[in-house]
Amino acid sequence: MSESIEVVIREGILCADFNEGCLIIDTGSPISLGPDIPVRVLGSVVQLNSNFGNCAWTEIQQSLPFDAVGLIGVDAFSDAVLGFDVANNTLARLDVLIDGDETPFVMGSPVIHCQIGEDRLSCVLDTGAGLSYLRSDETAVFGQALGRQHDFHPMLGKFEVETVACMLVMGDQSLTETFGIATAELRQLMDAANIDAILSTTFFQQSLIEIDFQNEIVGMTLG
Image (cartoon, one colour):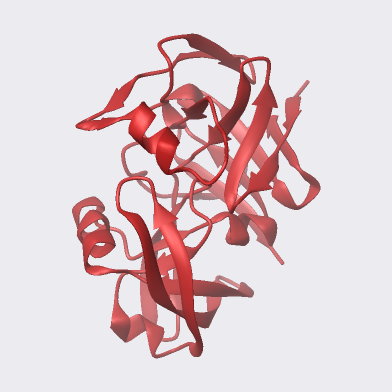
């Protein structure tokens, strides 16, 4: 029997309301952050951490465009299989094995392979991001320019980026996704993680995604 919770996108970030308050659900974060308390999420109890490296949760909290008491990272789901139906505001813990592609995750965050134009990309699935990103300007030439857009990153602050609409292909499935072209600072983070793209909540809204965090498998239906 699966267990599910209601989720909502606030300012581009996936969130859920708990007894403690609003918690961000962030598949791009290796650890959960917040006040030093345990939180129960979909059958798992996770300890929130007050710091992530040199960055304090209180600093991240102040940079957010909405109120949140904490952030649930992938450490909460290391032994779980989750189903993301963001278009219908549902996140479920599944009790069945899933069909999908096995790809090494990055610090616990799910990764998929896709293609844009002639470029084959390694992409991290990040529900803590409101805009998808391409690391390389060269990949962006396969897309249609859309102009500049404002965005923010908890560790990088607010910035403005050029955006493009690209056809993203996975096997016999495809969809159009809007990407920002990574700033120099964001590109450094992507270089360190060895990823070519970030797929944000806008991608989740167009897809049904199942993630087996323990076995590092992602299954999805696009469109």
